[in-house]
Length: 194
Image (cartoon, rainbow, N blue to C red):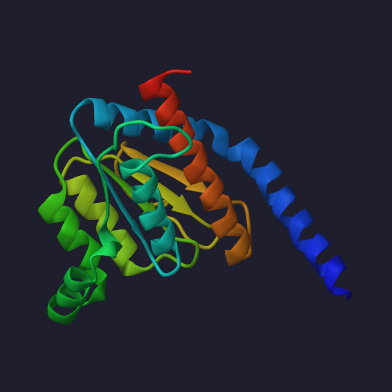
């Protein structure tokens, strides 16, 4: 296959995933944005975390919240739990990597805060324990997952899962980035107006 044809194929695959995603994700994205706005208006914050490469998107989301998305506004309270390498290393060394997010949520999370957890690959124990710790702290949980990940068995009413309809990790990550942009746009719209 020629390189230009390969590029065209990747673009077409991405477009199909995003088109499919609109049909199944729009309602959950709106609900997630409403959840975050409600938390912020109540004095809460967003704790984000991500497994593997999804950790980059967790940090990206926190940056967009603290700084800005597409227009100037006051910073919004959000912390990427995988951004503090010293804490990650210390908790992983003492308690195992599976505890790195749950330990921070138990320490930093408060009722009314929100957990935004991302994973594009298989669900790791650190992801499961993070969601459980958030629920113990009475925090709503927003999950961005892929076809081969997710916590469909997670108990509780305060869980919103936004699952990418992609079998490829790359297409899942592309979808997650679009979802994060939608969340930021809706948050800004609700807090700052049109």
